[in-house]
Length: 79
Image (cartoon, one colour):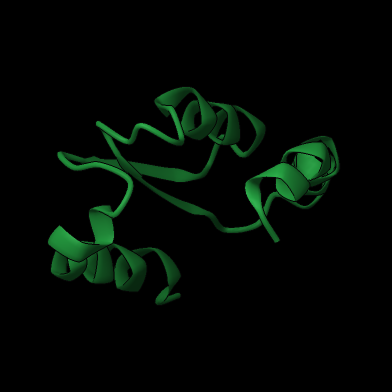
């Protein structure tokens, strides 16, 4: 999938998330030039119990913050 094929699916994904309310972790680079913070905030609105964590990085925030992101994954999904 590419960004061009993903965007048209957003309404379907939003319905799925709203209906199912899955356990959700949103990890976002504050300075991501491709996916703006509004996208993360939208998911948080659709899934209010989602855990949203911002890191001081760009699109490849996992490269710099792999350890704290791994810890967040363990915290959120260890139940």
